[in-house]
Length: 110
Image 1 (cartoon, helix red, strand yellow):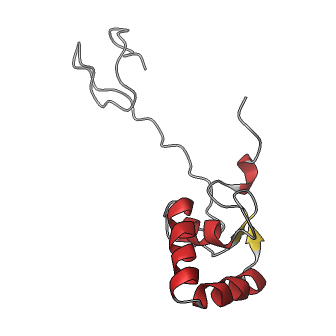
Image 2 (cartoon, rainbow, N blue to C red; image 1 turned 180 degrees about the vertical axis):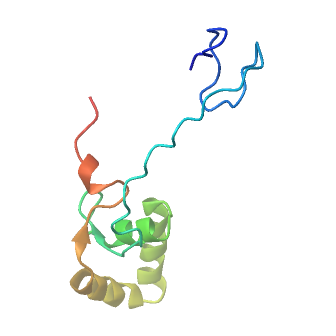
């Protein structure tokens, strides 16, 4: 951003110029896109699945690393045995969806 008074480069969003002290014109804040579904939903991962995507979906819902959730799930299966039943129930009950990124940005960056 350039100061209209002294034409020196200043940081974007500055209210005054660092060099000449002139007040900068107000810049309208960019309009935020409407949040259609701002609530997080529990979904089975389509883009980060190993078996059915349940662990990756749970990890995304709770903002955890998917590997951590997979290890904890494996421990629950080995120690208590109830992890298998819960995994199958979630496999059936939870819908599929994208996790970790928005559905509109599924293309690989170039």
